[in-house]
Length: 359
Length: 122
Length: 150
Image 1 (cartoon, rainbow over the protein chains, first blue to last red):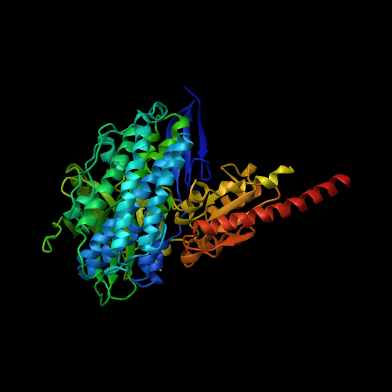
Image 2 (image 1 turned 180 degrees about the vertical axis):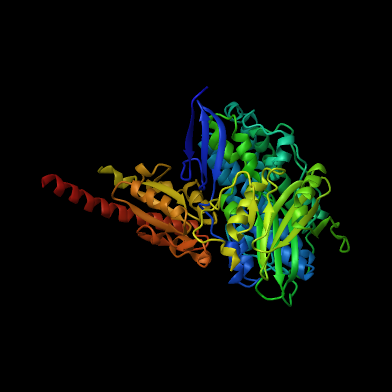
């Protein structure tokens, strides 16, 4: 029998932007088992419901994670609005959709960059982040914030956009669509990139289903699940398809996310075209009394929000089930049988967001 | 644009069940091809409320099983049926002190390694 | 040793931040803001780092990790706390698992507030850290010289 040894991985590691610790059981260079231990970023922000009222909690929810910050604020607002029976005005719905897709753009670009850094293609990393800055500039122009926007509130949005801003968004989309082409070509055709991604960390459709995976990670294995098709906000009136792949390897995950980049660009264009006029928020009276589950599609996958109110300004429970939490089991499965050298890359392919996971 | 067009309604129900029924229901839902979407606990009026949500990916449905129990009541883990439930159950056990038995693997209140014991029970 | 003041290496550790400051620190190192023009290089190895950028507050589990990273860095060293969470605990101050800012565990020299801290503020913090590092280096050299003579 081969000799087994345990190699600790993380929490501080050059390839990991965030702290997660894995105990890797290895035989020679092959991973036999990966045991995750989390908790380095656990803050316990769900307990803040006792100290902040339900309006203030929007800002706490946004700080679950700085990358998908908009989505968290949005999901929490949707849940409270569902409990209170608030119908958000059409313009607010469209604005939320536009901002959501813009944050998906920046999140996916960030991920592509980190992936390139993960397999040692530094130039590509910098190119992705250069384009990402353009998205951030537009987000700053329209919301006032670069990563945390604080534009959501219960009953609508806080800021309106004018024609100049919309023109700037459209202009940016045209520009990055052009600039993305050579980068996408590099990801899709460059031999060095493909040799690091093809066939690495394969997860079959059955495995992905059995392990409860979510988001692009599951879609790359052929699971057709995209919560945006439920038609929350303005998604019901916009035209888009679910992007999937049947291969299930690291390249498929990269390919799905590249597809979603262009999909987001198309969704934003449609939303700007259809953007209705009118109010951006409705006044909200009373306190939430009741409970609701809301599911939305974050850049990293399906997120579940649970809010339970008891008729006081302080809600009883806010719970966020983030996509990375669902993908942890899938990650451990993909790591089995992988080479030690691929571990960093494979952790990156689920697009881990540790501060989401641990809250 | 069409003002009256509303997003279609999808299944999103909460069903209250007995603690002893949980395993049987979970097996039934597993056979239907459902996926455990989330599991969480809440603490309200001296009672623990456990919610296990099962998603139906084909039809965007979400069925939540609700257990209401006292602090001491023992619950059997569903990690035998849904292996990835272990993370959720360990979380509930650590943060809410829910008495869940036979979790595989059981982190023994060391998932987040917090200093306080069951901080949400206040 | 003499040239190191022109090129201090930066180690970035994410405490328990929400990632907001975390990705802004990374954004600072990429071409648009390009903090590397001040001679710094981002490294993943604490043993080779001179400046520690820490984002996020301290919780019960990463307390030991932060302390260890700080101890592993060679003298002289400078610590920059990026973002309001690393300064005081910020919005998460009242959470049960947050002990407070980074200065609960290690001595912090430069505080960069903001939620999330803007790249301009982070760059300013890095520039100040480089200046402080140069000063400390002079002191350290004088100390080493004295030790040798004695």
